[in-house]
Length: 235
Image 1 (cartoon, one colour):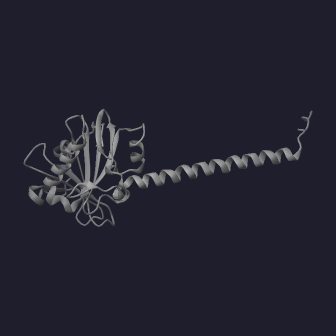
Image 2 (cartoon, helix red, strand yellow):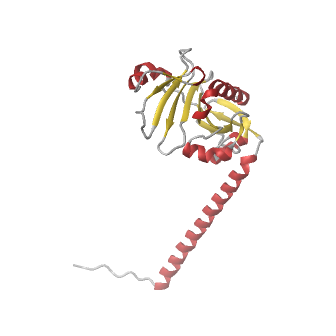
């Protein structure tokens, strides 16, 4: 058996190589820290930026004040060349429907609270609607019959009475295609968050979430959101 010849290399060459790798690593770390610092600063500064930006959701052009966009990542994209989105996430407050991007993080983690509204415009509205699942699915899962809800709504409770997690369907019985939302309360949460989805004329899907305490104003909330979105849309 013949052993290979030893590698002829001086120890200081390995030292130089190790130092070079270390310097490159530090340079990369500094560059990343600088990038994310700039990104955080620009994202924070854009929270109060009311300048209009034009973006595209699917094929629909939309013009809106920058500070209505909740996500710092999406605000940054809206100001650059990559201003096309599949889903655009907005945050506003009721009843003035003013921009509230500072509430976005909490709304995404815990759901909108009090008067916050989390609004999404989605370009892929192929999902089956809650209304389509009402008769064949939700009525069978309901723990009891319909119950009266606020301002003409009816309630179907899907969770057991006293369960740690509350789940119910609220709907307008007056119209077959009328208002319907699913309200969920997670364990430990102070209240339920209701989720509503409907298809707009251009094929976009509008989804919005709100605190259950706004259910008595469901007509005004939906009308207000639709009117606000109409002021943003160009196509």
